[in-house]
Length: 489
Image (cartoon, rainbow, N blue to C red; front, side, top):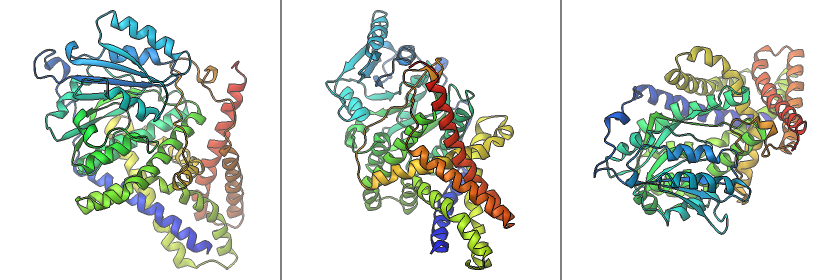
């Protein structure tokens, strides 16, 4: 039974690794990343009858530390003033509202068309705020930014031309990073996000597969939102849900990798865990909600298969946990003469193909973005360990989605230039899942020692990755909580 379960776990990991390998080949075959192919801001007219009206939406919830930064950034967006309006969709319950009022008033006095929009409740969370804002907007195009983003002044001028075809419903910019070098944790996140945008999004766009709006740093056609059924809070990833509903309606999406919009990365591992939990659970909810509709749609088989792998990608995490639990016992059984035999382990060795897909995807992403990509790839083992370290928490997220457990939309705290550990939003308690991660770390280390004692040298690297992954997240959590509790609340 152990051998069978382990084989199933490895087969799932290989499947999704092969998909990354396939997307890597698509990315190479359709390499369209060029230097600034969109019109430069200086070459575009700032007035004229051809510019559509754009509504810029900024949903906020308790963002006292960064509210002024995003409001100032969107106020500086270059666009014909009579064709741009800004909505600050403020659901805050703390002093953030006072900061928003001051900055909105500041820019309104300077002629910026900006509105401070408040609701009577947080019903629907971010999706509800966006939908409420639409009822008070006049734009035919809708740009959106989360509070942690800082768009460049020419963002609208570079995005609007992507809607030259009336069939285009959404255009997504690439995320950049404001604080990638703040710590190993932020470097890890930046590396992983680069892989998603520069490889996965680019490949899905180039291969004419379904892609996703990433919730921010993008622009929608108002008619597309309405035609797809509008913003819904059925899942925690309202952006992915609307993306698939829109594409199932026949709308086309575009990805603009040359338009980089930087954002602040979480420096608190609890905040990162909460963000990953929300993305994982929401993606699983979207898969449950839309998978049948995807397979009934009149779409090519390749689009359906790739869409399925996209929506179910987080299922790798339960199987990572399963592999971590079974790897060492399986090798011990083999050492005692009770294992499945050498042919079985030879076949399991093919799982390296899955790792190759993950590695190649990250390599191509780094190579397409940074001149020093070779040096950056030295950080790959840490990225792999950090990603695997979230396996237990993300498994819990999938389990909640399968059980259809409703959970509130948990915001990711932002800290701007303030030290994260001194922030009022810093989490000062150890997350309960950390105890499970610590147990997995001890279990994996024990397995590593046992395998070393029995001389299973070929199996040590794989076991060491499990040990490093769970040790990294549990120790980092303890150290960060200790640091926050040394500071005044």
